Image (tube, rainbow, N blue to C red; front, top):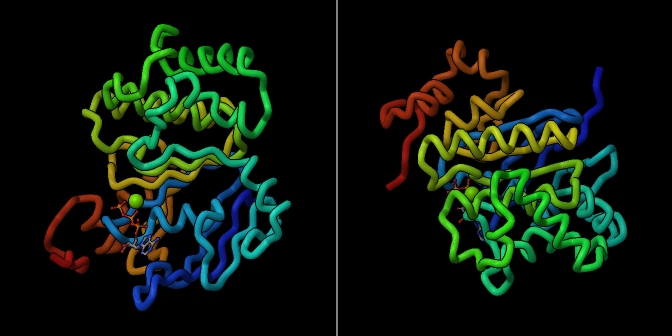
Length: 254
Ligand SMILES: Nc1ncnc2c1ncn2[C@@H]1O[C@H](COP(=O)(O)OP(=O)(O)OP(=O)(O)O)[C@@H](O)[C@H]1O
Ligand SMILES: [Mg+2]
């Protein structure tokens, strides 16, 4: 039996009266790539933010490497943070910094790497995601959406995290660029031996990246399994979601 890198038990999070996470149970094994699928506004980003310690859950447990992180002290939270890398929904690059400074941000700020060395490392990372050194001194706003995703990916892996979160990594990209980014995600996660948690509603991306898929609906994980199991499941919620039907048990509130 391989060990769990992340273990979530009975996690709850509400904002005022709005219950977002309503008893999440989820385990991610070391080195595994888990993809959480679910409709817009179902709490996928909130779930990641709870694991990262950006949001504090109302109750429940999140363990990383067996260590409880809910309400943990600052020292433990900092140590956990050091293990994690993140590709934000929408990229979230700093426009006031150059491309290389974005990529090297964690290296300079958290790992205290000297700027010259950090720039060399940033250029190496940019190459790894298919960008040439001449983009290093540009501003992120001078890049296309696909290039920005590559930069975000380079930044996410820069500190060689043990856990990488990908929040909607392919949103806004054409199908071919999406596939390129998916390949890069697989390569970089496997290359680092990292545990990956991706959230997406792009099923092509989910199929490609996932060792395991979990579906979030009404605050709970209502189904999980492999891609093959997903294709064979009779679960009407999963079937509706993967087929993208407006008809079915999932009602979209307009
Ligand atoms: N900081 C916050 N304060 C109040 N409500 C919040 C906060 N963050 C998220 N929410 C609410 O929680 C719900 C889930 O949001 P979340 O961003 O996790 O959705 P999502 O599943 O990531 O959706 P999408 O696929 O559109 O990104 C939404 O109703 C949102 O308004
Ligand atoms: Mg989201």
